[in-house]
Image (cartoon, rainbow, N blue to C red; front, side, top):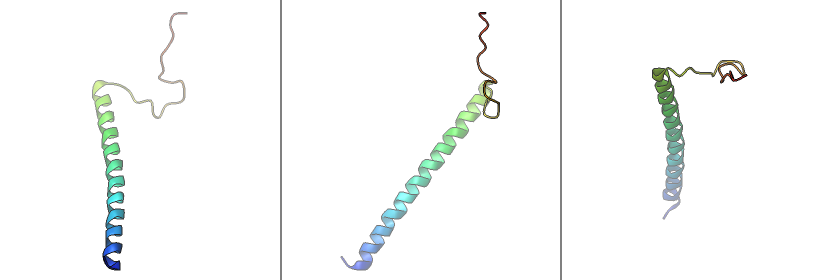
Length: 62
């Protein structure tokens, strides 16, 4: 195997690794978007922009 063939095979392996990382990132992003859509359809409010303690469960047994 000559030097150019070895270099091109190494570059192809690196490109494959990069594509896998990008694919995993896109899949996670899509899963998060689907989760948000389902929560919206089910009427579950998002507490992402609320202060700590707001939107939690209330203990009314006292």
